[in-house]
Length: 482
Ligand SMILES: NC(=O)C1=CN([C@@H]2O[C@H](COP(=O)(O)OP(=O)(O)OC[C@H]3O[C@@H](n4cnc5c(N)ncnc54)[C@H](OP(=O)(O)O)[C@@H]3O)[C@@H](O)[C@H]2O)[C@@H](O)CC1
Ligand SMILES: [K+]
Image 1 (cartoon, rainbow, N blue to C red):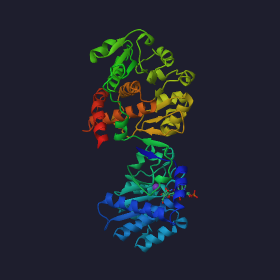
Image 2: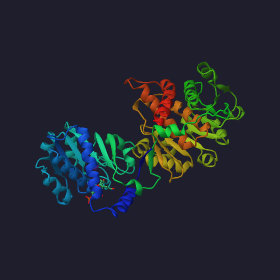
Image 3: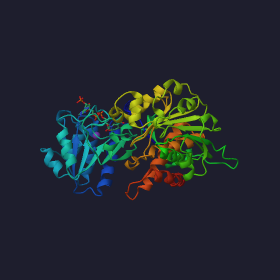
Image 4: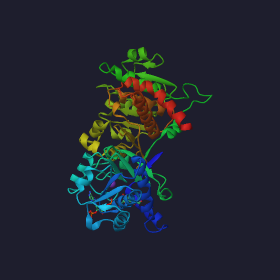
């Protein structure tokens, strides 16, 4: 599991650790890890030209001490001081003592740099870059240098992943002690590039429950259902899929495709697209009457491609099975009917649907994804999976870590992929996973399936994503064992 903690938590942990260590020890650990990461990225240090962008805080101090280490190994290091009268004095002395210098002309230094270290602001920053830093950040981005952000890309918000002004887009970020939520959540994540975590000994001081966490192969492998010798199809779980319409029969087929690959023992399809479903998947149990008469299920998936036919939603919400509500099912969703449920409930909106549920503009959701998913989970008293390039899954209990899916790919932005995801997550719910695990494991498998299918750089269809779930499942189980 990759975990991320918020700034206040990091500060508290840092204070507890610092109280036991000699002054400056933490910054030296950070700088040593940062310098080593830069050396790895560059492949060599001697003769390399490095520009440090140095702000007024300790983030700049890290950059200066790392610059001093690299200068001692033969790099030509120049520091661009954005707040000359508030520069970290110890760091500056270390840099000049190691042969580094203060840049007279930032633009000339940036034009020839091989590597730029962004130490403008770290976890103490507020808002985007200030006006004096903007032309310098643009010159850095416009150069041929590799840009390495210190702790986080300057101008991005550490806690929320929001980017409210201009920020410096990095090729790599070296972060200290723990990930920050913004390094995992869009839009800030896109500015971070490849993220490397440097251990500075903070782990023992950090709370065991992070703010945000991301599953990895071994976590998924641990959560995936496995049938036992006594399992029959009913004990493995039955998922009911209420999806599709005369206008959108394909949504039913794709939701069933996902459901068949999520580990449930049987899939019941309820709706008008029985012929299309059976033609593709003869193993599906089909029913054309109301869901209540379809037979027992452990979970319902309701919504994909229903169009105007959303009459079954209240009936399904009133059932005692786990319920996943997606797409058209989210329209006219009654918060009281959702909040009153005792069985697990998972809502799976994309940004537009989430915006409608929150009665805000779609851009507001996209720019504040973490806050939006938390607010939806709170309002509906349900687990919410907010789809997107970094899909988030929030529990209604705010003390539970929000899961972020690290397996997204832009190729998944294709018609029908959400239908596959709903079926898959609903199937995992039927096997007994709780809503947060079902949603986050489904998002992971779905993303991994898409990545594998698009590995050769060609566009993929939602059908192929469904087909790829088996391979993704296998990759997690095999990867999880190693
Ligand atoms: N915690 C840890 O475990 C460890 C932390 N370490 C390091 O310390 C870093 C945190 O250092 P920090 O607290 O000094 O804050 P930091 O981000 O450098 O600067 C904030 C200053 O910048 C200013 N400012 C604010 N917004 C701004 C903006 N938009 N644009 C421009 N300036 C802006 C604001 O001052 P103002 O100008 O508002 O008076 C504020 O005082 C952390 O990220 C990590 O790198 C490691 O060394 C070791 C372990
Ligand atoms: K930074």
